[in-house]
Length: 105
Length: 156
Image (cartoon, rainbow over all chains, first blue to last red; front, side, top):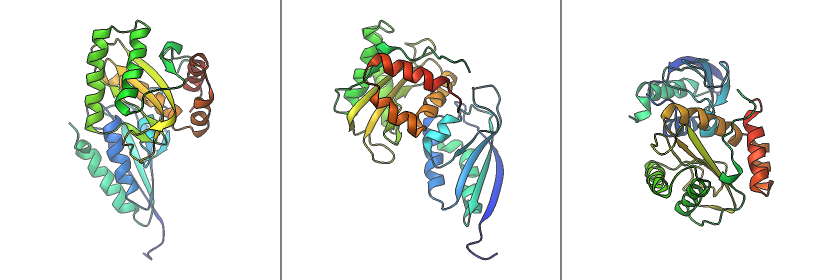
């Protein structure tokens, strides 16, 4: 593929942190996303319980406030979508963070 | 989502914070809960320790002039309490974007799930540029509380 051609990568992940996607994991997530050129969004795919935020709600992964707005408890499924030349790397990095609970117990 | 949250009480809104540091502002907001009778003086000390300990793990100054100091698992509240303060010139919160903080939402919740729910709704207000420009202009605690109630209940 030519460099500069923008591609879109989408991947589903799950919130594994027991206390959900609270302020510290949200800060780690947004900081990681900001390290990429790609535009990165998070979309609520399914929720284990109603927190008042509709499934399908999509936010900017680079904003802590946006990530917090999702109010995503443990077990929430989220679709990460990245568009841009480094979209692959961005999605890989975020998927890894979800997998290791953002390094937060 | 109900149209009103009953989370915003004019007794817990400060249109003009006087504290000059992060710690002073947090203490000032917690004192609202004591003045209104929501918690006791002794409980306010516990809450202060909890909120400052959390702040030391990483700033809650999450950008755009907004901070959300909190205790997620506090024994001193049942459900959640929110205190909101506006600081005219801004306080240094070591915010993620380095900007001074003008609006502080202090959240005390009895369990992490309740915290997540309340923080999500507060973030909904915080991410809305129009509402965040309007909030500091409310002038009085009474107007702040009704403005926040309305913002809380509006659609995302």
